[in-house]
Length: 232
Image 1 (tube, rainbow, N blue to C red):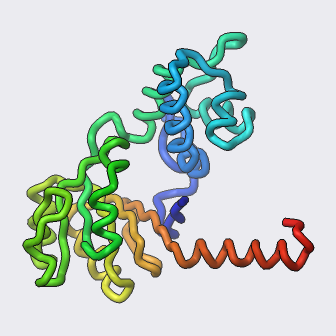
Image 2: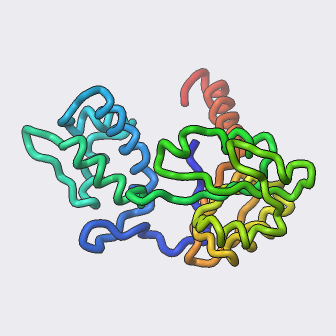
């Protein structure tokens, strides 16, 4: 499920690409899909792939894919296509995944348990280095091989683990307070599942996943189709 970019952003042009060229935020949002497509292509044993084949796997048009990859300085070769391994490396570097990213999870309830045990975190170049919760009944328990530490020690946990990204699954009522503490401790990226908007300084990135809102949007489109006799 795609997250939504916080209004507190450092600019509309996204990140710097090849030779300092700005990569649009929309392109950055599609890069993980391209990486998944390339990994699936590599797993199938392909050494080369065309823009048509890769675009179909990624769910975009070939023109869109070629335009997005051009920001990375990758244009493919006419009549040959893209070198899968090379392009995979380019996208990995562009996403900042060439180095392992340390992740701290705050809020170890049902969702937190599921995320802590999600194998996709490690498979995508991240390592979960710490768990934090405010519930005394949860603190001290072991989840996914990590001992849950108290919320009062959050700054110390960030400093000890070197976490730069945090996953936030706390209730909405305390999400901003926890986010502020994370930012003060040095975290520069927050993925939040709390159903509220978070305010962060310009140097911090926030991605929000609001399951209820996404379901409401699906309900809107379902109702529109029903009202239109099946038309979208």
